Image (cartoon, rainbow over all chains, first blue to last red; front, side, top):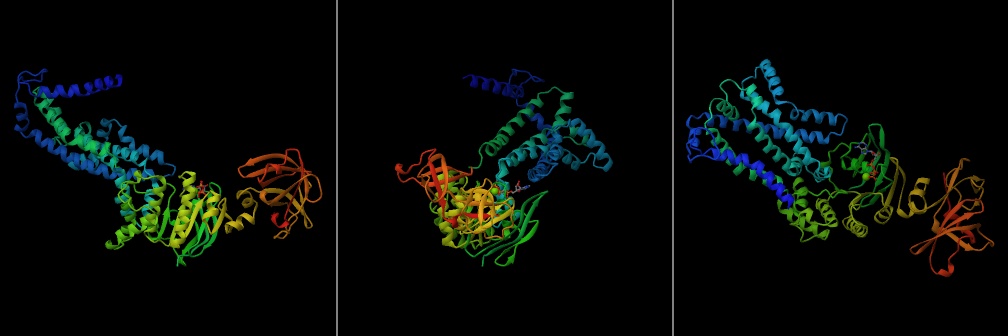
Length: 255
Length: 349
Ligand SMILES: Nc1ncnc2c1ncn2[C@@H]1O[C@H](COP(=O)(O)OP(=O)(O)OP(=O)(O)O)[C@@H](O)[C@H]1O
Ligand SMILES: [Mg+2]
């Protein structure tokens, strides 16, 4: 009973701000108010009017997809390497690999900017992809390592013993067994990249704008509920695609 | 031809020698058990044969062919693991099919080979089950079917029964032995359970600290241990320290005990007399014949009675007797005489 109450309060605290923002998207006033006054969809139409937001959303999605692909590949291979290396520097190396998680992103952004200026990557899409990959890869490493820790190494040896080469062993045995970790890492990486602002601000070229950047500049100059409308759409998309994905791959383990 | 030959095979990890210069020949269809205390190098030896551990020295020959440098997937050996190591995301028939596909067995043949292998281990009808839906014994049978389906040249077992409960262990032991003889596959079986080794193997390799102490059929290992370690490790043994005075054994405490002539050249160095407790005759009263002593302790062990007898010299001897009737029981403090067939008391260097 008490447990239920605590849960209810937690859910309320998590859900309340989201619901409030969603409600303000429908207000007829020129700024977000709660409770909303009247009902209109004009702020939603506004989002698509100039194309600024849709272009930014496209860039963000493309960036997040590229960063996620890189993070999943590198992160999985790194985790496999780390879990197998029983030598001395193992813990030092894994601390190093995971360190970007602990790094203030503002420092990372500045460092990358300085570095990119030297090698001529500043303001490029590739530079952004690399920056986002650096931020997201450690999370994939972490999650894959977690799923590797409950992995019986004898299973891979059994596969080799049964005649499978390295390739077949990896794709038919290892990967299916660590898949929950890889997918969770991928979902995490995507959200992180899609949401990233600080490092992106340092690295983006003047004309380049990701969705978080676009929203950020917009709220500096305007208080229109357009922003609530964007937030509402993001929440709905996430609820329709992200949450079911997450539930399917994370909670329902292979039988 | 699937004989196995290990030639001065060794493995060093960092600066510890896990296995030192092992030489062994295993004949066609033979089942050889590796027996020894924890950490003696049994698993390392087996894993070198399987190709998971690269030998530091020596070579491995199967059917006369040197396979020392071959990767594990090209060795044609079937290994059964202690943890079963089934693929948890595949059902029973997919588990068995895995190796057949990996070895490019023609598609039309696969289904038949799966059925035959599952029948062999008595698991027909379990094709669609997942490993989690099977008991430990059933899982180990699937692991067995998985390797048998490949008709490997060699079967390798690393303590395959130690995760099972005692009763099932005994039953599976016999099943594995029967199957192995039926199929006639040359096999290595690692265990630290001597009863298991005794019942399952044609020959036993007793290992200690990375070396082979003795190789021989179970009865020979038991009745004729060649080293102190083997005498002490296998079954119970009385080990009496002493030296040879001419042809007679004299214990360190001064008892003169009957023994078989040594089968090594006596050097005057200390030797050990080894005799199994059940080979000793114990007679009540202080009469003629035998070495006199006193019963210090009597323990009933199921169908056996175990006596600890202290000889006049102070040496203690363990004696086991069938418990036939309470009338035969000896009391603590009672004077007795112990004797044995000279051939059962062996001298070890
Ligand atoms: N990968 C490794 N790295 C370092 N040392 C190892 C490694 N594998 C085994 N050893 C060492 O080699 C020795 C032999 O180990 P092994 O596993 O062969 O013993 P075992 O006879 O199988 O013992 P158990 O009955 O406990 O399984 C041990 O001292 C062990 O610590
Ligand atoms: Mg072992």
